[in-house]
Image (tube, rainbow, N blue to C red; front, side, top):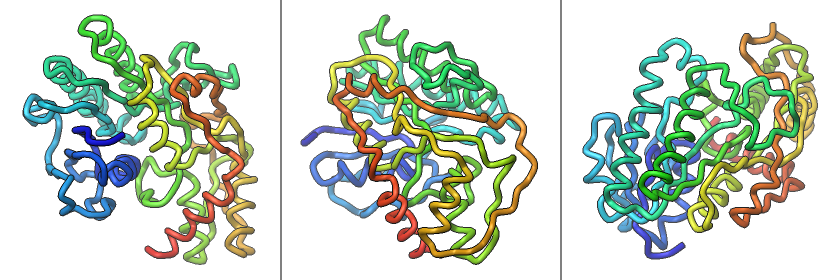
Length: 310
């Protein structure tokens, strides 16, 4: 992708900044981020000639000004915390759903080429039909998950009603450099890494036999770019298609760091999903293939980044 005008909402966040940094050299990038969870330091150059950074909130911003002359939108701005969405469901709805509908209307009015939406595997809830296919009915267990599922429906309706092209990417368990270990949405991987680097016991909720499908942030970036360029409208799982137990993950992190600390087991958290595994066959529709055999090298890269900040 080159010489395009691109809008990234939430572009200073963990995933959004990786997308921005990848595209910044060859495209004109506009980022809007209220910095509630993002950090401008995540961007490789906040003064780059190709970057227009706006500190603002899409909930109360003139979106027509944002989307005018934009080719592609990567929409990542959201309340991304399940616990916070349960505590503040109305605020979650305003940020995740209402603001998205306003953005879609503005994008359609201004003839944006395509919008790529960051959705979540949380929409599947406790569905036990593993591996999870995009055709499974949503079974959200939180206002956060409900908001993502609702946004997917709005994306489809705007495609049908206004011709606004879209792809909704359902991320599974994303990890990588720049992930905030203090975030309520943070993956178990940064929690394990930071605890062991600080010489503390890592915490595991439940028996540790719950499984997750981990995907590297670099692959999420590839998925976003591939989705923007592909002639596909619909929902795509973005994952490795492999499951890993939390206990086994801990052993890998511990061995990689050369630690002998054992984890501390805590009571299972309410609303936690026991198992998660994606069917990734639909990724071929956006010409995407993830090399899941690189997990340990990706983990090492993530660990090395955490070493620089701790």
